[in-house]
Length: 570
Image (cartoon, rainbow, N blue to C red; front, side, top):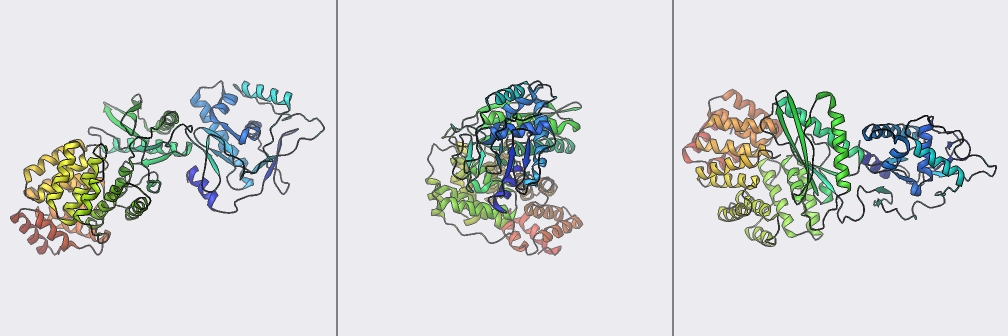
């Protein structure tokens, strides 16, 4: 469970106002539970950390300040690691209080309001934090702070304020439950940053190298989630994303992380590029050698640097919203729950004033539902699609995407190839390298018998979409195209490529089964059929075959039909 999930669980479960413990700072430092039991941390360092938080405004302190106070003599990496360890141990010390008491993110450390209050100082002149003496190099700033506190004895008592009525400080955001949590950036930004993680771009890595790069990126994502409340969009398209796509936010990433992987001899290098949604380069890392034993350390340093840049980035209000890419990634995951969540969110956004064209995503979801045999698609009309695309300003950078989605829906859902051609060609004119649109063009041209045009679009799609998380569906288009050309072995090659990228992809299983059958490999074809039936017991193979025969040249379609009937597939 991430820190964010833990905070939510605390908000949703149990009493809203747990019993308050008390802190004694004058004399020997003590934490006293409501029933009188002692819960004082055993370490003087953790006592000092907690005392600093207790007397700070709103019981909050920037992480950088704590680093300077206690580990000022260490380099930043070692100091950050020491602080993380101390905070982890302090959470364990405070566990007897119940719930979440100590909270952190990338920028700040704070105490949950109302959980720890200061006891009034006694009148017998006891020394502030009596006996605290840290044997720690680099804590001169804390010692100076302690001398000043003892001299002034002017401790602001935050215990008298009600946590529900106290105004939140500038660096916090207040959630719907009334609790507050630090922002990762100042309030100057009109939109909070959100990070989209793209798949690694590479030439030709081995399976082992690809797995190692994936492990590094997974570790970067985990570190970002542990150190901040940054919303993370895992757009890599894997079968097991680090976190569910934040569909319900209705907002896309404001920044994109582009990994580039390359092997030189015996060394594997990873470079990270951070861009904003307008494609401006924010930061590029030095190529880092990826070694098996240093993945976590490499990821922690990368995550810290990324969060530093995001913390200082102001998101312009006219930055394009990339929510469509998050929604499409959810659809291409082929996860039924993600498809339904996306549909529901699109309906919610449409009903609450989002631009009407957002409905194109909901219509595109119907293609997945039909092709994957999930459930019958909802009906749409030609006029409705035209109205949606016409509502988009010509200056919108996302217009080619909307045109492509609407065009593919026109072809797949209502069979209007004239409208589909007009929309897909218009999208290509505006964005010649939009790989998703090139894939749609290849499918459309193949369906009308233009195999040469389909192959041209497919080859351009393969080049433009080499690093796309949706590459598996482009491979299936290759399987369709080569089957239509009568090249069954090449068709089987692309179907197998798709299955390697997406093992549970119904579309790939269909074409792998068909390719094996047409190539005379009946045994493997039946294995593919068995896998397909396990995934979708009620799948309408006859309906798919009928549609496939319509999209292929006559003789090949008839051969496919005879082969399926001969082997008992329909």
